[in-house]
Image (cartoon, rainbow, N blue to C red; front, side, top):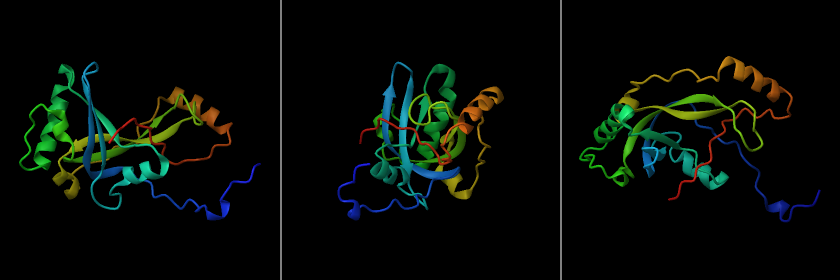
Length: 188
């Protein structure tokens, strides 16, 4: 093994306080409209509390952005999209949706994060069951602050798929149980 130059000056990696399932007041960092898929990709960060600026700090230290979710505006999902827009309007007094998605940047929103199992197709964890956080629901910030939300139980893979993946995981040396946050191509 080669000696790492400047080893004496390298700071040890401290304990990283991982965000947990629950309700959070967030703010919208960026919006991308995918007109082909008829959905908005919404990049967010935590606006207040223990995990304020969580994803920005994660980005600075790990070089990827993990806070993003999608809202479809297809005809079949338009009522869900309207619920999202209504929550944004009620959380940001004076803001009125004008069909300009870029106007959502900087707006606050209430989100509920839930754990979800998934199997990455690439990278060092490819083929192994992992857990990540997803935006389960969107609410007004008032509902989040009052605790008027429910965090659903972890979304599990199908039993057959999970058993196959767990067998593969047990045959590896990977014992990392931390959240694996998806890399994002967000630009600020």
